[in-house]
Image 1 (cartoon, helix red, strand yellow):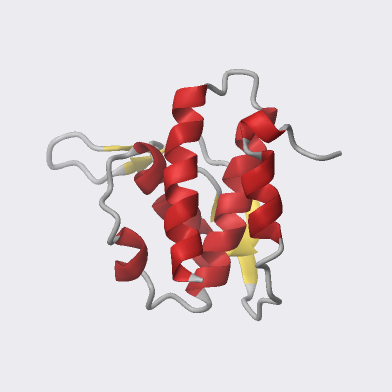
Image 2: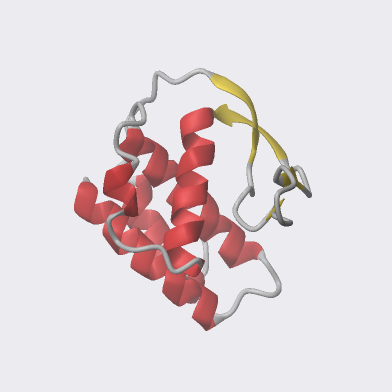
Length: 128
């Protein structure tokens, strides 16, 4: 079933065509870490709401980076600063596809949240 064009379907279609095979090893990762780490004074950070996925660690890092650029106010250089990750560009493509699909299917998605994803997607495509 294609994604609704108004909810990111066009961007999804453009990005899916840029996928290339990956040679990364999957493992259990947190698929929604951005915003799910609590900080309190000098205490160690606490990870909450663990959402387990069987994906490469680079994919999980890319999802964090996409979320930070889309909604966390991260600057446009973040994707470049993490480019030392193995197969980084392809991990970013898959992270963007994941976030676009979740956005299209989530009942609380808004045009404002899509605007952040659209901005991040344009930065990802500029790297390809």
